Length: 333
Image 1 (cartoon, rainbow, N blue to C red):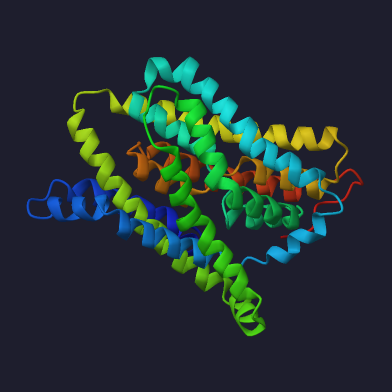
Image 2: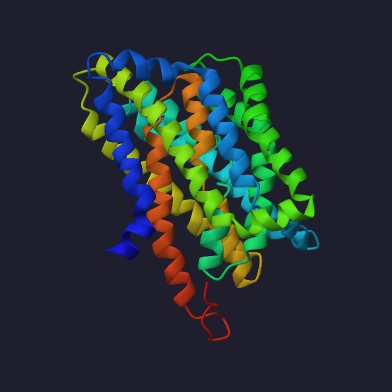
């Protein structure tokens, strides 16, 4: 039981935070207060910036330079993450979502497709599966460093006339609350004592960042609860099922496509694993921030995050146990 709680504490806490967010809007005297917190951009942005700093501080970005001589794997993974996922998600929303999803939920699905690779778990799951975590780190750095340009571009292309927003404001917000904290964290790592300390404190910094993620999820849940109250009577359970099936199916499809594409390009098995995992994972923090900034539904982003945590655990363990081309099993994580 202790091991289960240690491994699954974030999912349990996430469920508790979402339940608290939905319940708080129904409590007289508390609803207005939590709604004001959720709508406070300065508070939300400061939490997001802090989380991005904490996630980036233990990240040894120098490890990515080992992949420069062979840029194929990270380039393929970035392509899967920033090209294949948006296109597949757009097709799903257009062909399936048009019948089963509200505009609010469909826009939330499109946000999922446009955000970068997750900062922490891509390298962790790649390493767990016996893959090349240097490739995952490269994908993480490249996609997060460029998200302030790529995410607004894709949102503008995918949403069309379904939503109106100022792309310049999104560019500025992502540059300030996502990219800038990462740059500051990596500059601080150049101070050798700070770099050593951050590397040794990776777990503690990661846990601290996850508490910040939970705070932002609470704010987003409050916003979502308010919108659901306004749309009472809609068959929300069917919609949630469609979202869950959609995000899980797209994640798994991109992961498998990455593995197959990397193998077709004759990449090594560790690189194949890195392409599959890093190419299919998306970051919860940036997704929630964009959804709240634009007033979109956060449920698809949370659903995608949960699916990649659960599904990738099973896939990573399967890949680690699977025999390699030489008849040997992948090295242990």
